[in-house]
Length: 143
Image (cartoon, rainbow, N blue to C red; front, side):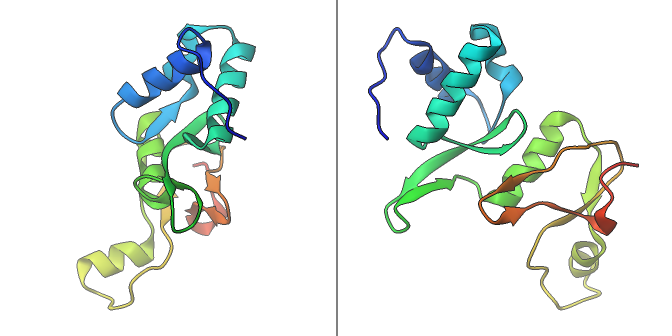
């Protein structure tokens, strides 16, 4: 559903701010000063529906581009990199899982297919988009 964005609307102002933000992750707090909670929620939801953003967690969005091959919005930097950037932006201390560490150290030749992280600080949320979910090692997402 493509709706027109008027230059004086909050959606346009939020979209303009999102495009100016560095990186590929947009947190709700990045645009929370532009209006009240409900207005910001509606503006962010409209941007998700337009394909400008993808919601990957509670108050966490990723910048997207429209893929003509898939005919749908795709996360710009890839799901794994956006999740790592989101954890860093949220101040969560993390490290790669055992499989990734072993591969990076040359102890294993098996390339990890999924990004698995081990959290060293508390984070109770989850990050997901479509059928992809960030996996926390040993299903522990708090320490």
